[in-house]
Length: 130
Image 1 (cartoon, rainbow, N blue to C red):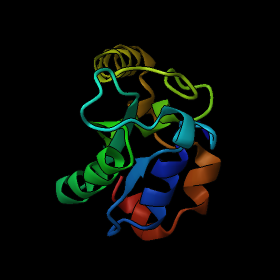
Image 2 (cartoon, rainbow, N blue to C red):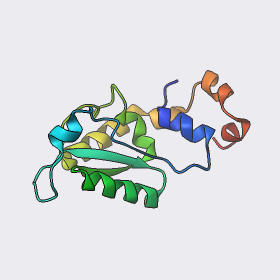
Image 3 (cartoon, one colour):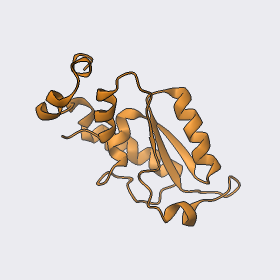
């Protein structure tokens, strides 16, 4: 499987709205790096979503707990996983946007889709929608 775990879940549940966030922080980062809105250069947290309203709601939560939300499309979800360019890194919002943009442009992973083995494990309805 070369896609994100999020893509696999989305393929198995095609009607589901998905938002992925916070997985690229370590548990200790929540207390150590959270800052109020008034603090300049807060740590950024990506909010990858396939539904604008759901993404906005979760972005507000990310802001409320002390991080700068960086909204991105769900097609960028793999970049938030281990070995992704933002996983475990302290970045401000501008740096995260730039890194996700550059990394997505060079990865090509959005076009590959699931491997034949994963595709075979998907429900038929999910395979037809790809």
